Image 1 (tube, helix red, strand yellow):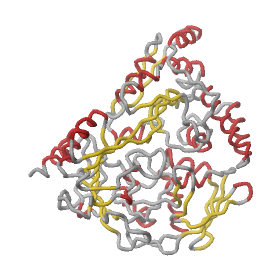
Image 2: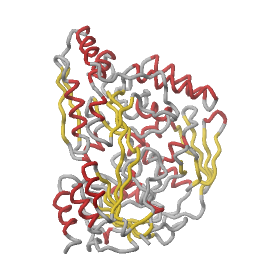
Image 3: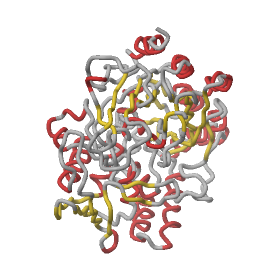
Image 4: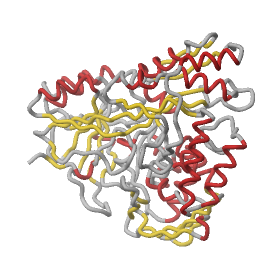
Length: 507
């Protein structure tokens, strides 16, 4: 009975928090087992479609694999692709693929599969990850079974970085064609989804894939749970009913006091205020309006709300490509905000911004600060996590606060601010920003390119397209009696993620 109590609580709490899509099936998989890693990340994705922004890394990287792997230092390593070569001027990229890989449903992995995934993610899924594919790739050529060429619309020297992220996971073309992949993920990873051992809304079971091409992971099976309440998740962890869970600052003292649990954190999320409706006639068309609102937000106040938040004056952190010392930001100068607003004639401004339970407080504080300006009325619309992930930057709302996962300045610009950016719903880009980006793109991989991309980031900051930058630390707790070698993934800036393959049973 003790092992069932936390999961029963979780089931009651899930009704308003889970997006479903975990499949259906019979028996419970809650019984502890030394060959099954039990992980809780609080819910399930709204869809398992490859490349969907509604699916966080902790879910996506269980069934799906990427063509290449990017380590935190920027090194690109082979994965499903074994070799690559850029064409002249980085206007194309040819990949050599493994010839010993199968999808979980028995479909062969080959160049046709890569093309099918590209067309699905770029043309059907779209969004934050599919959009850059559609905008940056003119065509995909199948050379032979193990060779595929991406032809770009512009020099695209960072395309390998993009392929290592969540933009193009490899899903079964068969499951894509019949639509089942949205509810039953079918990839090439060491763990295959098993609907018969899953419980809809409670657990998603992934069993060992017998035909996996690579090294066996520390646990042959993974059971993903959906316990959205942090108190219930901690209780399940300490009771040994789950092995790993994401957690919040409020739970840390309880975890520290336990003799069988440890925790760590890592910088996982970059949250920024982003103005989407910035084209002609838009709510935020006027750069001075955006500037006043950015000055009104005291980012230090937002960051001091929790110990897992760190204020920043720009998207990239020091040492990363794109970081610019020239950027000073607009942090917490209400007098300057009021001065700008008065010069504008104290205009009326009404807008709505979405927030989920996990970011409601920080969104609300930012909105309260913006609403200090006369005639400004920004309201917060509370939504479920699954609704938030699928809609916050989808064009429904004129501004939003959410994760920007891009790890290079070229990809951040291309994903959010260029005229073709999938979340630039206005399609507007200033002449100054366009000129700066064109110069950086034409520089390709030359030594001058880094400085030119810093100029692009400076222009983005000066136009106040994005502001109030926060670094969010992800906290992961684990039961030391049941598991060992628990740590963050090799990927940079991905939330709700551990290095699944490295985790082993304790002892």
